[in-house]
Amino acid sequence: MKPVVQISLDLTNIDEALETAAMALRAGVDWLEAGTPLILAEGLHGVKKLREAFPHVPIVADLKTMDGGYLEAEMMAKAGATHVVVMARAHPETIKCVVQAGKDFGAKVMGDNLGCPDMVLGAKELEDLGCDYIVHHIGYDERRGIATMGKRMPSPLDQLKEVVNAVSVPVQAVGGLSLEQAIQCPAYGAPLVVLGAPLTIDADAFKTADGNLEASLRMICEKIHAYVDIV
Image: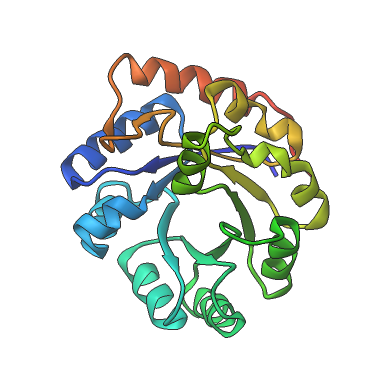
């Protein structure tokens, strides 16, 4: 598939999220993500507002479902989400329920391997259970906690090639990537590039970063879209 640029709206105010989304789309971003902080702050009304403002743009609802899979996926899809996220650490029946709801309500399912003892195995199990995409994810708290102990901060790039080689569905790498690392993701075989905290969002305040963000995003999108199709 052709590389896709997704911006994670990890904001806590819908007005700022809508403004950031409009700017990102002008810069060439392909998908919008209603980030977990936004959903916590605004509920699925935030997803509805994004859908109303951008009727033809794919929207990922990052609710990180752990239980009640069918209902949560149904609610997100009905609110306007085209993609929903379920965690690999959820019970397999929950993942199956999200997959079924995705089929019933026209949403694609992204399986997130955050926290898996074996990240590669977690990704494979998500695909086996029917997920359409894999999110290879090193968590915010995990990265910062390890860094405070004076150890090297883990990166999703550490095992990205292994994850890509283990599954046949598209992969996205998430978790503390630098600008240069995010742009490199398609070269690893991961065509879904997500931009968010701390790349384009202030990681500590969860608000739009200062500076000429639109110009930076446009440059990022151009570089990522320049890659040939990823098999």
